Length: 101
Image (cartoon, rainbow, N blue to C red; front, side, top):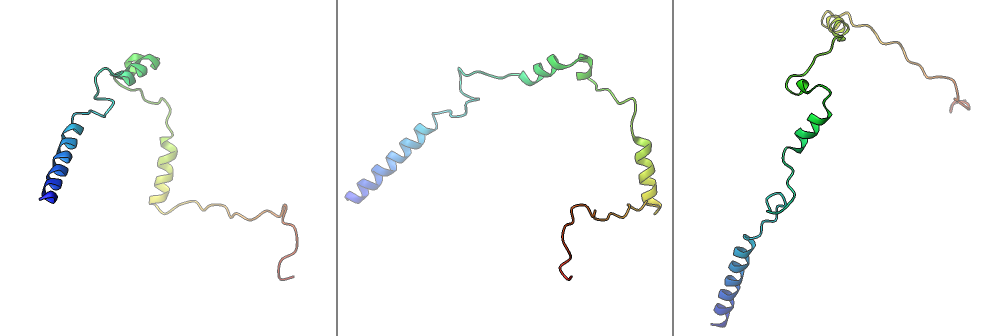
């Protein structure tokens, strides 16, 4: 009988703890009386924009490297890719003889 009482007491305490834990709102953004950051990012962007109309619709570039890019892609598709120059190691600071000498 005591083990049943102990089990019921433990179960009752557990239920009480769980029900009280649900009362606490631990998320600081949901708690009342806290500093709320509403639309702060938008306000900062508006303050930094040189031309506020750019926030509604962006502007394009007047000069683009499109011609250079399309030429390289055309060479790739047509199998006329330019070879890279052969890279060799510099003799500067080589120091010492080879292991086999």
